[in-house]
Image: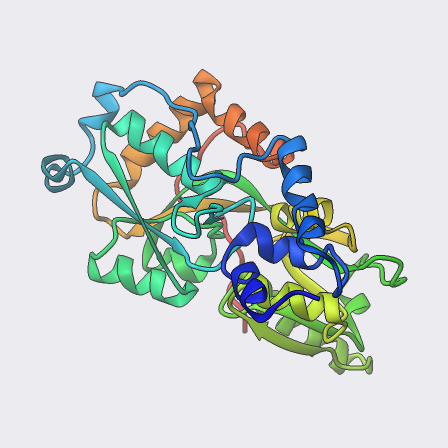
Length: 324
């Protein structure tokens, strides 16, 4: 059996949290290392030494950054504190924030000739940090929504796909909202996927279907432990996170996927910044520059999310509609 100290260590890093679900409860320490080897074999670098993909500054784009930020020389980036590989999570030193979202942040910083300062907070606090000016941008799998556009500007950089992850051989499938009826489903609190589940649940109940029970989580460790132990039937979250976890743990599968903006609109993930602060044009042009020079595609490939590529970054495109 794992000792108490071993369990604490397993719960303090993204990699070992994922690995915990992929081994038997009475597995040995050698068993726990198996998923580390699998991650390496799959091409994932989970160490603090990331050797990130870089690109050169572009003076004409950098010149569009507000003078206050240019004088500071640093772009302060906030994002989720929870562990959600391959998007944004802690390396195996339990300190360094890595993942595709941080790689995109650094590439944008390269183009704008700015150093990147990565910070982390619970989901809702990230918006507060941008509101207060404590952070310049929020880069952490943020979906464009019509409600958020009232307060923030967006520059898109990835398609938003969500997945319904279930236990292997559970028999659960997802083809539409009616398929959540009667299930106990985990979801991140305050996310757009929560809003979709609540809306679908209300529609199902109005149609006479059995209600779903929706349980809320802040960290990947918590919802994956709940899924692995059978406390929830399914977890709805970002498709990249579920795809990564399915590969590493080997005990779950994806029952279906859908757009993060619902069934009628393809959602997009974007850099979020305070509305009309003068920063969004430079960020948008920086993203389009890395799309054109190929470094954008290299980051997507590095983290196994090439299927979420966009052809061009847009400023404030149509987003997830407001709920009633």
